[in-house]
Amino acid sequence: MSGHGSAVDRLRTQGYRMTPQRLSVLDIVAGKSGHVGADEVWNQVKIQHPYVDLATVYRTLQLLKREGVVTEVVIGNKLHFELTDQQNRHHHMVCSHCDAVQTLSPAYLDELNRRLQREFGFAPDVENFTIGGVCSKCQTAESE
Amino acid sequence: MSGHGSAVDRLRTQGYRMTPQRLSVLDIVAGKSGHVGADEVWNQVKIQHPYVDLATVYRTLQLLKREGVVTEVVIGNKLHFELTDQQNRHHHMVCSHCDAVQTLSPAYLDELNRRLQREFGFAPDVENFTIGGVCSKCQTAESE
DNA sequence: CTCATTATTGCAAAGATTTGCGGAAACCAA
DNA sequence: TTGGTTTCCGCAAATCTTTGCAATAATGAG
Ligand SMILES: [Mn+2]
Ligand SMILES: [Mn+2]
Ligand SMILES: [Zn+2]
Ligand SMILES: [Zn+2]
Image (tube, rainbow over all chains, first blue to last red):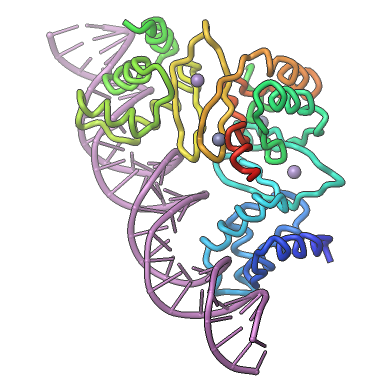
């Protein structure tokens, strides 16, 4: 068991109905170690529940994201997801040239986070924070 | 004239062909004071050049973004653009509840920018940086 | 000005994600 | 268990953006 049983309880408590579709999507994402594309989640879900629609997968992933159960990472121009792990919180840097993803410790966003909150009353969604740019490899390759 | 003549020269120097389509897209974005949606750009372009395709508008906007002439802002789930103004550089905070956009002085990103560059060799695309979150109004409305 | 080269465009289609709607199923109270 | 209420789902279509390809047009050389 991947430790997402508590998430199920939390969702149920919030009044959400735990359907096979939702449980399956959650299982798939929780079972993967890295970032999973929406289409890959769908393909895996269909193995056990062939009738499930892609729209349901998207709706479920958005729901899980809203509830903080999964984290969204925008890679290239596709949405990816991973189980939110409180013990290993991190943000993402994504290279727009090669789509490589590097993780970023939350400490790097602490100050920005606090300043936006205090000076503007704005609550940034740091959990799903992804910053785009060019990785070091691609910068090197570029300057030739 | 909205001061984007120099941009045209720069693009030409880079080897880009200045077609009526490109000039028109640039004129439209430069003529607006705020953030313009891709579809709005297209509608304006079509007034003078009815044959122009939406794909061309998207391709041109991406080109102008790559060259730093325009800045991209993701609002809701649509792409918006504005003329990059070196005299008034700023980033964006977008509320995921009401789509309100607040601007952010570049100073807020300086430290993060430098740390990512120095510690990871990662060059973040700060020019097109947009951070999502919940604005103060929506936070207040939420807690009721 | 004319021509050849090559970037750019329009068109059509693909891709990715979201949304409206009516029927299906989860949940809870009885 | 059963039935009623309300959420959720499959389906189909819409929406937004990107892409492949053949035809067109911008540019620079002669
Ligand atoms: Mn991650
Ligand atoms: Mn702006
Ligand atoms: Zn890279
Ligand atoms: Zn708001």
